[in-house]
Length: 316
Image 1 (tube, one colour):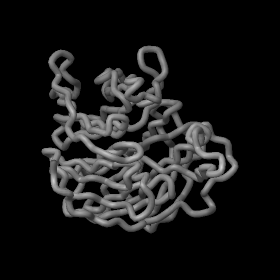
Image 2 (cartoon, one colour):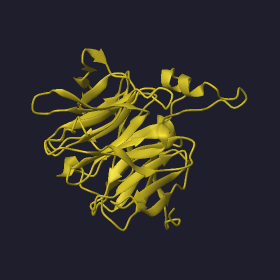
Image 3 (tube, helix red, strand yellow):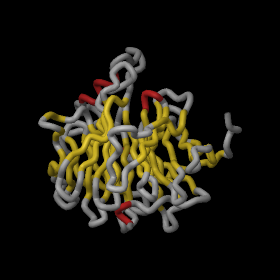
Image 4 (cartoon, rainbow, N blue to C red):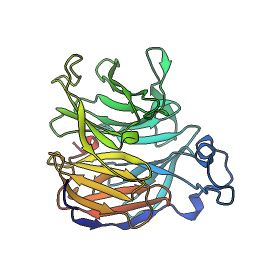
């Protein structure tokens, strides 16, 4: 439908040092991923980095899903372990007041104390029952948290959900259900639209929001905004640029697509490492550098872009 967009190359900003690569530690996440692998080709999983997010000092935080670690990466690319706990962290975001929130598949949304590594529950359940498995989240300008509850949902089990947690009263609102694999989530700059990557359908959904941040329960015109093709997985993380365009991490294809606010492909960012380009975050002094987790290699890639990212909630 569209001509192939121009390619932007990446380089490696940093990678997990050998001293922090795990071997021999039990992990349910690792055992699940190994199922179906050929016996003569055992999968070696030393880490799986996701959830990049910058603080105001230029440090990049990210999570390690299988071994429940939180890393802080200095502007020079040096890794520090901030937390090592029992869980499965999928995403991390930093609040405007500096607090660090983590979406954990097993425990819900947690608050991290970077000084002690302690994790404190913030949102643990919905309507008296646990979540299926929270994957990613985004802050609204008023501090509300929109998040995806993916679990193991897929096209044959479309049980994924999208929620909003209201900061003013701690109430939880179901935005959307029956989603086959909701994953990355982002708001446009005006916060009139919520975008959700639906991994198992290989597309991005567009959800119009009411002025107070919810959706119209009757007649809400929710639809597919971008239809992708190919990859061994599907769209994972999302980021928004200053013009309302989307950076869509296409895991399993080694690509991050840049789309205009109308959904037209503008650029293809190509991984210089592996194909598991899972999450991304805008950073650098002018917010024109995109930092990308290539999860299987434990690398953080970067690409210089012609447009700046929309400022992170932590920087507003």
